Length: 407
Image (cartoon, rainbow, N blue to C red):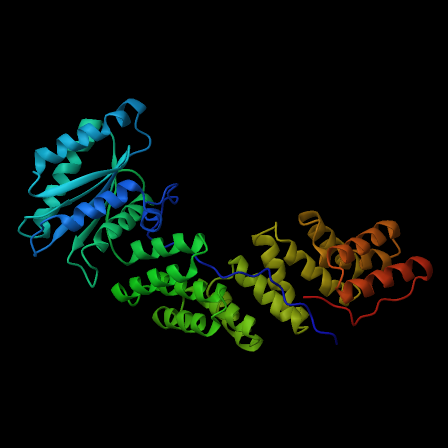
């Protein structure tokens, strides 16, 4: 039997943290850490030059809600300055406008962090009352963990991004989730090495954070460091053996490594916990199909098509099974659904062409589809073979060569 194609249509799953219940922010303040603005650099310099007592300081990033009126936003800076000086004086803190609606401040000379938070809450209330608008706030303390004083500013920006997931009116303190969000942002931007650093830093704070371990594993997976990915997912699974997305990702790593038996083992485990996860059902059905375990594969592929009816792959794989079994009516129906969902899918086009030709129906369309599959992937010998079969069937109704199959 000829080797089946390895699908590139499976991706690692990276769910949001369970805590993040609101849509992600449109603007990430942590971007300023990597693309420094004039205001960012000005505050960095002021912070470095400030005479701050050794016992530490508090840094807060504050943003006025974007839903505030234009008139309110125009006076935000003046009100922020007035409120700042009503709570703190120049000897106890500094501040800077990051943009017309966002500000950063550092203050010190308090007895403990509880006192610091009382001061910050008082300032927040005054600004919110004066502007009649809700505020987002991100807070970071120094000293904290191994972060230097200069890094606390960046931590406050990551904390306000964390708060933004919950919407206006929320305040969040910098923690492992803040680093997870910062890492995810870098991941979205394709800056994988920097993302890994954020996830690893987060794990120093929260070694058993499954979201951080999963995110780290995904980052290693997409950069091809599969053994590191496997170790990250394994660590996460050791913490929570029933975390489905981690189990799925571990199965996908084994599939990429060619360990299909182990991949099937983990995917069956995930299926046993929850049989309604599309990615689990699709990949499990795909792997069982590859090993010609058709009776086992079909229920998973059918489930995948029900859960996510827009999946062309679920339908086309069922089409391949039916085609191999010479159940041509079901093959034609499945391939037809796949082609409608993705008209440029060469595997579906090729399979549908052969199914039609074997039934001696719509032979002109079958020939068109077979030619299109070859045009999409000219070097693919299986598409070429199927095109030739369709040509011959159009002329003399020759049989189907069962050695030509797909995955």
